[in-house]
Length: 224
Image: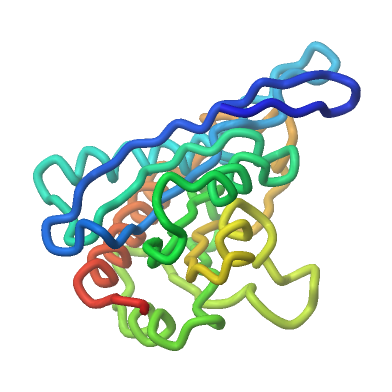
């Protein structure tokens, strides 16, 4: 838990963490993260944030359920970060007040907006900075109808998502990351980002795709 002041208002924020011990590499950690805060109430209108980012948090719950019967080889910390919308403050607090040594964190998988896409496109950001990850992810065959696209981690600043969500806090500590997300849509940071606008089939397929990536990396990845 931590506190901060924004717009002359004091906030008390809380990161919610869960730990699953690895079966083979218990002292090496993969952080699976999603921020659970959103815009709150603005002018007496509730901003529910179904895609941004209830979708990522719900996917993290699915990971927890999967791990009950399929324990990972690496230890996994499930991290629901607070205060992402205030400048990635929850993830910054996590890496600055780490509960495990930073050099024991081998990867951050961050999910932020993964439940809707008119083109069935799910982007994965971060392979540009790690050749091993790039090779592993590039060789993963598409699952179901989702188009898994590597990119948005170089070139034009507007199209570079390296700093767009909580994975940036890990990147700044030289920790490899993969960020899964979709392109911005008309409901982004609007009060109409509600559950009725989620694309259920795409969401399920996207979750299966991310899980496939995780299983591949958990079996093969050992960043020194």
